[in-house]
Length: 241
Image (tube, rainbow, N blue to C red; front, top):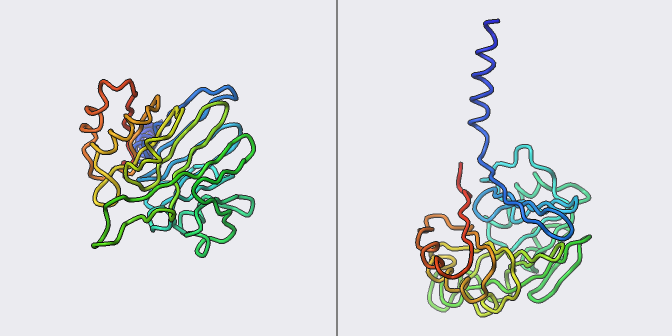
């Protein structure tokens, strides 16, 4: 009988040690799409029996998460193209899609260039431009040159989900149409500040906007800038560890 309180304490400690994975669920004509934040720019998408991991990164906790049917990689920086984390979510049946810049480092990648699209079961995967306009490590250099990285628009059950990758508020982002849910990056010096991200979101008017890849950014500024825009802003914890 005395063991019961000890077991209860052990369970409580284990529960507290688990990462906070508050997933969002979105209803589509083909069923629910569930999107789970993992860490930084990493997240997991589930819908129609398909598991998609985006930019798996070893700083995230993948304990207990299902293996990927599809992995999407946005570009070749270490926090997006991470061989260690990729090995955690991939098996011999997992498909991987990404830009040409990752093809030499990740075996078996199906290359998607900006503007190209592929179907994966009931999912439509579109690669959209993700790049810097002005920010870079030195004069005449950009952190993310145009054409090297992808953002992605995923369509499932009539809903469109946008994942920006690493980018500034480029014209191609502002020209997006009919986006239901947008995961938008922001952090300096590599992408853009919250004000610029909010201005881009105002331009393409998704129904829901969720910041990610936001380490060190003032998310309150993003929320305030979109307060009267008609866009619902949701803040999720991508840095719980």
